[in-house]
Amino acid sequence: MSVEVSLLFLEKKVEAARLCASVTEPVATGSVPGDPKALVADYEEVVTRLSESFADLRSLNGAVDKATHLEAGDVRNLKQRIAAAVGEVARVAQDLAAQVRFFQAMNPASAALAGKALAKFDEVDRGTREFTVPDGPEEGAEIAPDADEPADDADPMLM
Image (cartoon, rainbow, N blue to C red):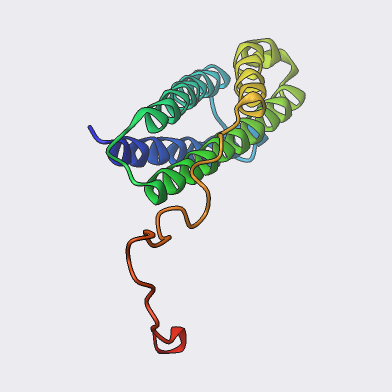
């Protein structure tokens, strides 16, 4: 599968994890009655998917560096999209960790159940802080004319 298609699927997986926060929030806040064990199982599922997505983004970032068929502009675009997806992973992990903490505060009897999920959300969040996307090729590298080509005297206002 191409890097672009893989990244698209990863972006959608992260978006789905973000949407899960809106599904679990009413139960976590107590505005909708629910089963604490089922909620904790949902948290475990979301954090597992989020953690897998983050690991896949890391490996995809390495694949972009090794891809020889991509132009400089494509590499830069993919790197920016990977960085945005990693930022979204961090936001989802932080949001759900806050939701778990609120759940624990509102349900002291079930607080211990959610401890493992909270630790995993915090771990994913820490991992995103350590992850950096190195810059791609310099801006304009792919559009600079070759020294052999004559300069184009087109009026930029007409473009």
